[in-house]
Image (cartoon, rainbow, N blue to C red):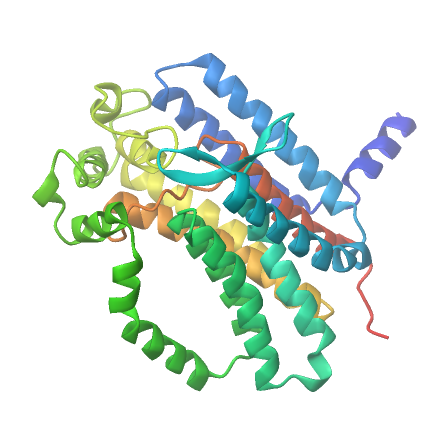
Length: 366
């Protein structure tokens, strides 16, 4: 019995119980919803459960890494990510008109997923190094460090991932105390550059934006996803139609129902009450992440914890926004719910960093 207790203590000493509880409840919700979305396809559910176990294992490993080591690997990870993105540009495989994957022999990897963690790590490391003498030029350098991978990912093209990485980097800039005057200036500059951005967008990206304004103009084409998802959400009502009884889902009207649009499946079957509980669960995880960020002892840990937590929020907002029709469809999964292994690993890697920040002895600047 004593040996078992020692083993349990060893396995959980660097695990934050509150954060892990929220993650596991969301994962369980995801498996239950996926079972219905795939018409009781046990093989798909089992595969997703395997993805979750692998991701949890990676989270545990990262949680056990001391904070000093996490700081040391920030620059190497960022540099490696840029090299891999360059490899995608030169040698990447083309699927459906996009060059996003790199074949490394034993498997294919999507380097842009690595940058979701590498970019905020790099920016947090940079600002921590210049904390004592922070000036405008440091923000300019940081902006360039952010823009380089974002532009490379936009060229693939992968608008959804580029937006998430841009958001994760912006959160670091914001948390360092970026002036509201500069933020307002950037906003005005961004608004003024919209015509240029529009001219640079691909045809399918322009269609997504136009479809957002009026999905019915191409009801069987670009607007089909939005129309069917909003029908599914509305038909769920307050109580929902019940698990495995969603008509839009099981009559195959709803597209991408196990990945990007799984929230519509959940909404149809569990209704407004189910959605409210899901949002409360997400808010609990976000709140725990922000508490960890607030209690962080150094600039580096505060910035990276805040960025990871706010990026998690952005995932949720963008996915739910596109499913209910207030944002364009950009291919962002619902975190810890949608089917897929790559995004699951990336997300739990970030949560592992949060746990390391919370459970390891606090860093003291020398």
